[in-house]
Amino acid sequence: MDAIFVGSDRQVFWDDALVDLKGTDAFHRLTAPVKKECCFLFDQPNETFSISYPCVVKDAVGYKMYYQPWSDKDMTPCVCVLESADGLNWHRPALDIFPGHGIKENNIVIERVKDGIFVFYDTNPGCPASEKYKAVGSALMLHPDGERKTALCCYTSPDGYHFTLSHPMTRYGAFDSLNTAFWDGKRYVCYLRSFHNIPGVDNGEVLDLGQIYSHVKVWLHATRDVRVMYSDDFRSWTKPEMIRFDDAYDYALYTNNVEKYPRAPIYVGFPVRYCEKPEWTANMEQMASYRTKRAATERVEPRTGRVSTDCIFMCSRDGKNWHRYNEAFLTPGYENEHNWIYGDCYLAYGLLDSGREYYNLYTIDRHFSFGAAKPLSRYEIRKDGFACMAAGGEEAVLTTKPLLFEGGALHLNFSTSAFGYLYVSLTDECGNELSDGESVEVFGDSIDRRVVFADDVRLSDFAGRPIRLRFRMRDAKLYSMKFE
Image (cartoon, rainbow, N blue to C red):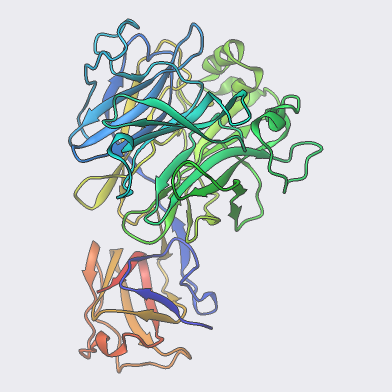
């Protein structure tokens, strides 16, 4: 088995990339975010019908949250913005770029859009100042063939408030979703919506928007999926290719919410899982929200009243091959009159760093409660804590594959009970001990604990050599590690 170079990068235990399964009986465990409080209330006249696709953007000043309120008159959304210095207190900036709309604090930045709009701050050092903010969404534009066609398009802005429709990116896909894009340090990456299992179409075939929707009611028969494409300049893009999962399921993913994780060399995603029941049942009649479901059914489409949505967690080392947890990361929660309906659990895009041991996450609730004010709910999730390797009340072992590291100290992000513990030992590639003893007992709850070895082992002596780590664990969770 070839040794894996980990250097001094933080390494997370969300998948099996570093785990030797033959020498491991510890197990993966997903962690749910903790709901905290409502930190803003959307109650303007243009916000109480429905709100979609919030995304958080960090720039040089603070944080902006872009979102799309839908009109109950013509079903045409606009794009609005909130601002915050700390992620706890949000406010509407009084911009008045597009006067009217019956809004006291007019915070509209794009007046009319076709569907989902994603906004990000471009960290590419070569990006022109006039394009530091980019928005990605479905729009009608003139194409090189001389025809006006709907495509996934780019808007640009120098300040995050004044946007100009700039250029088409691709017509390959179906774009009625939050299609995400970012600079990954080397190139631009875009994750977008498409469909597979279209009757009469080979799943390997890449279709453009017109071809997809030439199939009658494709959304009733095909499966929504996620594709990825790449660009060096945000103008010329590769053809989108379907991302792959390491499980046997094939269910619809309505969004992707993919981003580069800031603390480790890995991508994360928080897609909305779309679950449509084939018919209305007696169980639905007993749910607290059944009146809301019926209202949605009558107002929009028959399928809407039969759909529930939740959110899952997935991660990838290369951006194409993904490990996903089929247990929900976020569920609609205990039944009430506003939930268990299409539109639940849409996490806002972006991990907002609290400056402490956790990230802030957000949802806009009551998506299909027409006429009701909509709370912005804040959640907390431990840094690196989306998932872990764990042991219960009986001791278990985690053994890594051979690793090549740099540095002279090992730091862990972990938690135990008072009864629990972690011990760490070093072995060679064949499992032979490289020191006379294990580390001292590691217990507690910390995102950064330096491991101390009982026999004063100098880890730097093993840097650059293939070694394995063996974790002996009881009632413990191991989220990540880092050599430095």
